Amino acid sequence: MRARAMPGTTRRRAAQGGLLLAAALLAPLPFGSLAAAQPGGPGEVRRREDARAHFQRGIALRDQERWAEALAEFQTSRSLFMTLNGTTNAAACLIQLERYLEAIELYESALHDFSGRLKGEDRRDILLVVKLLYNAVGAIGIAGAEPGATVLIDGVPRGELPLGAPLRVPRGPHTVRVVKAGYQPFEQRLDVDGGETVQVTARLIRLQETGTLEVAEPPSEGPDARRIRLARDAESIDDREERGPRRTPRWLAELSAAAPLVVSFGGDTPTGCAGSCSKPLGSGVSLMVHGGYGIDHLSFGVSAGYLSVRQAIRGRSATIEAVGEASYSVRVDDTTALRGMLVGAWVGYSSGEVLRLHARLGAGGLFGEVADSRTSAQVSTSGVPSFSPFEQSAAARFVYVSPEVRAGVRLARRVELTLGLGVPVLIAVPRPASSRRVFVDTGAGVDHAASAWFPGGPLTAPLFPLFMPALGARYDFY
Image 1: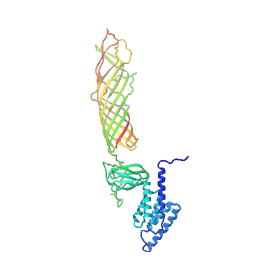
Image 2: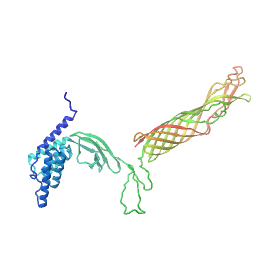
Image 3: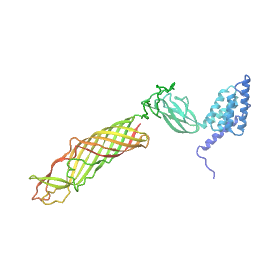
């Protein structure tokens, strides 16, 4: 079964075969038949003879298909004494080595340097090979960049913009890079096929801060000589101490989720929690969005989010007051919940590149409510009023100050994953408080109903902290 060639393979082989055939048509003539100049003195004669010897060795190596060695001999011959046949034979070796761009340059040089000596048939043969060579190479056109920018193809400078014509390149993958002082470099990888011209639009973005470093060798090591350290990709340097590379100013956004913990809300609820009373840590959930602007290591911005945290106290001692100035001690279960919106501002400092460390200080306000749910924690006994479960709430207004430390790792140039701990301290303005809660003694029955109540009191302390481990994702808009 005959194997099928891959798409484009047949065309490339045919083009290469045509090149080799056309190059073979340019059969070598005697060395000096088309010389660019006639020898003058003894020195010229000696150089001509040396050039002839290298030319003849090149012909012998070419007949043996030792193309690289033959090319070296032809190039040496040309450097001593320029001839048309030395030029065309060197170009033919370059075709065999698939160095088509260099071959084009040599053939075009032959057409220019020997235009007055070329016969019609010789010129036609050279033009045929050049035409085939153009189909074996591609070209890259650059547009849209700043005038004066330097173009590099595969790391080799190829000229400054604007270009007079597209740049010829061998077929295959290439890297185009356009650079100019004061602008961010442009880079793009692309594939170029034979006979194809690929257009690239290279738009350069101006840097906001640029400078010029002039380095001169000091005459000697003396008290006025200073050493400086220039960090890679740095935008500025300093001779006092190493500061590392400055970062481009950028907008940033961060989304974080936290699991807030509270030791105690304070207020009247924890009072009387002794003995068999239990008061575990309170917990909840918080979602925050931070937006801001970064300049070098510093950043600042605003934040907004939602907070909900609750704490249950089981079996605490509470006092019931009744008509006639009677009072009773009962066991109750209390659940205090704080929930509301957070709005504030922040300032931060960051360091590190891949592994990052962030410190942030935020301040703002919390606007919501504090609610207290109460149920009886004991079986009603004779003479002690009993009550049904109830809930009461009060508006909550807090000012908060929140220090925070986070560690992060860059997943990409703009994306970072962070893990940290914040400790917001909430300051009540004013303290949320419950009013006196009046209820009917459910154990006394309808005929013996008596009014009783829990006295009102503050639901939180004037100041208490939360502990908020958080996981976040950050995006920098460079």
